[in-house]
Length: 221
Length: 101
Image (cartoon, rainbow over all chains, first blue to last red; front, side):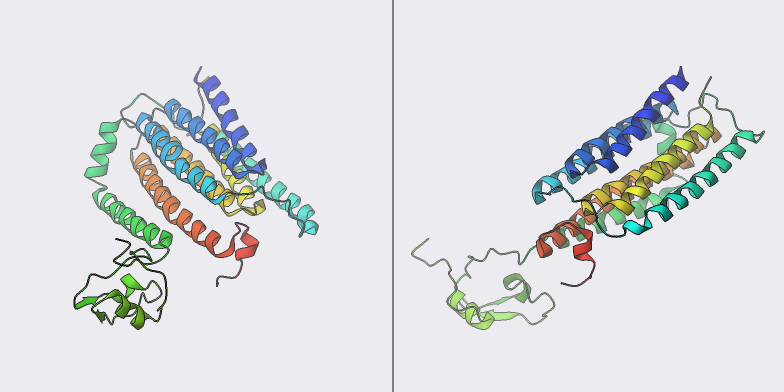
């Protein structure tokens, strides 16, 4: 019974993976990849790992693929054309793939032939409580490092996605003498430590050399 | 008949190989990115299979951390992809082969 399930979901996973590589349109590839993730989650259930299966569906098939599909839609991706160069390397690639496949078959054959293949019994290894206990006792330090990694990823993604200054180009300076950070007003001057001393919008424009640029006046307000 | 450990390892090897082939033959940055995700998942399957067959929870904790790394990689990687697209109006890796603007 479990073997049947394994064959079903393994076939689904391999089929979806091949379809992902064969698709020209990245959006169809993304949908195939979601199929791979779902079948892998089912395989985790057959391995008695319900927590990992749930996280697989929530994080991979949910969060990450939403991000990928969002970027595909945002960038208006066109279908990729077939590569024309490096045609001469195709026979070499086939030979190397055959060698790699032979190596893998050799290793799998000997793993199967080894007498000490462990057998699986019912245990509480995959349950959420045992994972939580391991995560917060033995592996507490890696867990905390993970949180720092996520923080760095948030900051990095924001920095990369940012186009310019935090203020829109039509912003005005509040009247009165003040000290302004230069990189807030001018996105090109990120590393300029020297602030701007100014009294009005016109003065800031004069300092930055963008006089005459359209800006909001008091009449517009 | 129950599935053996080697079945899962073979499936993982096949998925990983498909991911490698995808990275090598794809020209689109987003497609290559998805193939990398596929490879990470193949490795995760190996970890969970070993963890389940040897009854040791460490493998599943490692899968948890790999998933975190994959999420961070997705956020930063897609940010880089958007930045490349803004500069070059293209997602072809050959157009971005020189790492300057």
